[in-house]
Image (cartoon, rainbow, N blue to C red):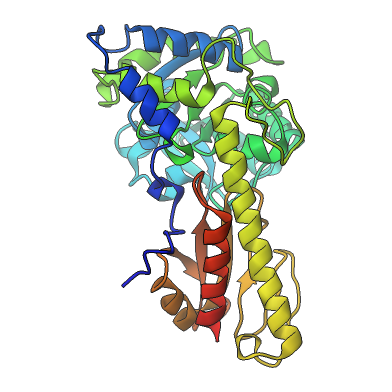
Amino acid sequence: MTDPQLPPFASDNYAPAHPDVLAAVVAANEGYAVAYGDDPWTARLDARVREVFGPGALAFPVINGTGANVVSLTALSPRWGGVVVSDVAHVNTDENGAPERVGGLKLLPCASVDGRITPDDVARWAGQRHDVHRAHPAVLSLTQSTELGTVYPLEDLRALVRVAHDLGMAVHVDGSRLANAAASLGCSLGALTTDLGVDVVSLGAAKNGGMLGEAVVVLGPDDGPDGGTGAAREAAAAAVPYLRKATMQLASKARFVSAQLLALLGEPGAPVGPAAPVGTTPPGEPLWLRNAAHANAMAARLRDGILASAAGSAAGGGAARGDGSARTDGGGGAHDATGVRVTRPVEANAVFATLPRAAADRLRGRARFYDWAAGETPDRVEVRWMCAWDTTPETVDAFVAAAVDALS
């Protein structure tokens, strides 16, 4: 039986909707409104998206993240197109082949390091662009933050966008956790997308305090530094309304999705954020930033607590650390043969670690989380611990204490 005092660390999707989001939905429930997006809330969302992402940006509310990705990628690619992705991309591993089954697209995965790929990885597909026997690489899809809790620095993203555009490919960002990446980098959502030349964004909400619903954001043809993909953006903007309906992503009562996105992004005229240094979130910052910055901070606290307990146990020669021969590696983790090791850089709201399978099972009796991959040896496993907008310091500290007990 899971201890009710330890909420799950399995996914930010487990978290409740933020009270401000729920209040916005209740406020949108007054009276009648025209269906399918021709309502005042969606009109205000359009205005707000233009403030956040550029004067030519268009927002199309959808029902979920997989739908946002399928609509986005299909709008950017011809029927014979392929999509270059990382091997751990959500579209490649966790959407049941939806881009291929529904969109008819071929995914072209690249081996990643901590979830990130490089310009060279993208350029390797160049020779396939004129081979009639192979899928035509038409889109580069990047996840920010990545599925492994890492964040592409701005200059790395800029280089990826540049090589893709030079090869005639459009660029899509799976932004289910775009807010966490922006909070980590201390930049606005527009600086992370429009200013780098990204063409289409799947803008997440549910993982950052939303109830349900996301948005496809098509950047304006004249927005950003690179006008070379203006035609692709115009074509995508024309296609998305029809694709959204054909893929069952057009909500009849779209105002309730738009109201949630407005609660997170802020009403037109509000600050777009961030105006303060990384790690500080004044009350005037938009809700998306406050939620994401908090979740990131809780993941950093969890990492620090795990590493501190590992180092302390190693120094003391406790059972959790075996003979006390703890060391550190590229993932920043202190570990030994029987202890816990942080395996990935913690740059957003996820902590990945390996520990003995038996210890993971004991810890799961206190709080739910997921196994991610095999560990360094058959008796170890890599796990994922996720923090959310509502994770508290007290919960994190209790989880760290439970992990220490499980390793004893």
